[in-house]
Length: 630
Image (cartoon, rainbow, N blue to C red; front, side, top):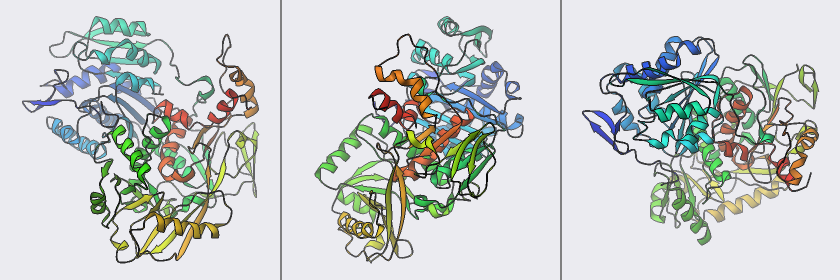
């Protein structure tokens, strides 16, 4: 089993229709596939009627297959939705089809051709994990969970309104109907959630009854005599530890204030805008986020740790995020050159461990690397063809509305919400996001071990050889392809306080990193900014509690697991952080912003729980409590 590339569905074509050789079953009814989907799943869950009075409706599916259920649902949503309504469609698939096969499977449904084409254009499935894409002016959100069904659902945080169970017949694909899968379905269900499935198998009916569904039989479709319908009578459960449980969701009309107009604040503002959620974006001076050529590329580790998996998930999401911006995004590809023998061995371990498709990552010899780069290189490397550059000086107005100038100096809590004070007193906000880097606004930052680091890039004139460079080279430092006769080189990352010293050191490091490009000219200008980082180099995202109250409620962590303790929830005040982005902010901020806004609005999470908790703002306090340091 590959850790990156999904398993082969062993697709066959019988009379022009898709057939699973792996499970020996058809993907949809040969004669009336669309009608089956509408009858069994939409009709079985009382749709579209059930979503008519809901601002946001969440459907989850086991078995994406050809995407037919999603497309039929999307089509019905477009015809029956009300202004401002949003649809989340979550679907698990262990053996995804290729884009080519997806479009071939669409041929029996010409009336859905335009929707299938839009799906194919954004179809994200090349690797395992969670993939989120948006359609219809961001009002329809598809999140594909690519992997083994029990693993994918166990890591999901969502509150589901309706379930489509469509994972081939239980006798042919028993893994999709295991008790542990049914338990996760119950955990994720809203009280009263509806469930529909084509099967009437007794084991499935009994299993769903045991986990809290009130099950009934209904007439089957086509040659099937019966099918099952269900309604959940229990309560949903979060899989988060007590100290990481999310706050109550904001009402759809409650405005959110975002402070900080760097890449963190921009990502939060964009995620709120996607939802049509009222918000106010405040800031001044984008600081490190004004980098004119920020390199967006993955960072892999040769192992299953959450940090490396988070950075890969963030890169996947960032590609779609930045491609939407048009002029600010510059496709280039990145070539990470092996710096020495030890680094070469590390790259080989990464490549062997992840086994990514060639469209995502491939290991190149020195000759192949030279062909990809357009210049003669003496080293091998890892090639990331989808990577690119972002012009951070053009953020505002491209991916989010323009921010308002504000320079608050104080933060206080009132009965009306959070008060930002400064030259003028701003209106109170019940929900406030701080995305301001190291600039503190009161004691709420005190639980985060934030560090300030200088970052700098240089503007280097190109020469005849370096002007042929076609991609970004990375070897500790990076060098972009020439544009208007100049390369951007960078970036430094140190605790020093004098950019002039950094300027000289960075120029030396760049020339040493890329000795093949001997005709690089001396620096003509530079850019610098202060980056905010954390000790583990991952962002800090999520609610900011009252830290004294947090320590009081969870002080028992100093003494090991709770025994006989009524574990409380965290003290939430609707204050949030997105900070500590460090040197990879343009790669990590888009997913962090999407997750943070999902927390605020109560939407399904866009990434696995363990990855989200790896960047949770409270992780440092929890670690210190466990180690007796608080």
